[in-house]
Amino acid sequence: MRAVIDELNRFYKETDRPYRVRFIARGYQLYTVPSLARWVDPVRSGKRLQLSRAALETLAIIAYHQPITRIEIEKRRGVDSSGVIHTLLEAGMITTAGREHRPGRPFRYRTTRLFLKCFGLKDLSELPPLEDDQEDRRAT
Image 1 (cartoon, helix red, strand yellow):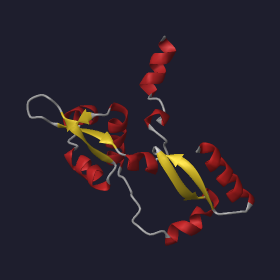
Image 2: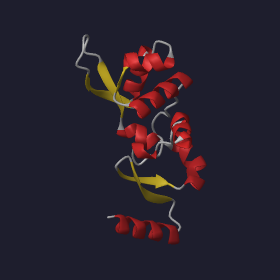
Image 3: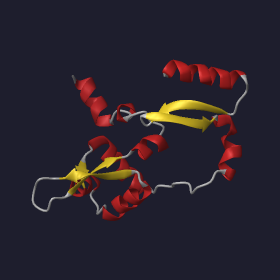
């Protein structure tokens, strides 16, 4: 499959086509080459997703520690995160991943394929290492 896509992308480039195919979020996507983005963005249908600093912080915590509960997120952030979690759920960036087997049965959250797509990741292994991880590696 990858060989066919590579050949297709070579053809698109040689014939000066404005698009390419890439593997992203465990699937394939036809996308516009970045040099033409400024002309495509104004006519693109749909609303652009803009995330607040709190939403990005919460999303990062979920991405690196999933599945994770709201309480665990709030311990890391130090503030109530229920509103931000609701926003991320509505935007489709996170989803529930079952419930904890403890009193109250809190939901666990994880990122979605839309998260991978929006950040241009093939999978979660492409997330950059956390600074704590880098320091731990240097110490050993």
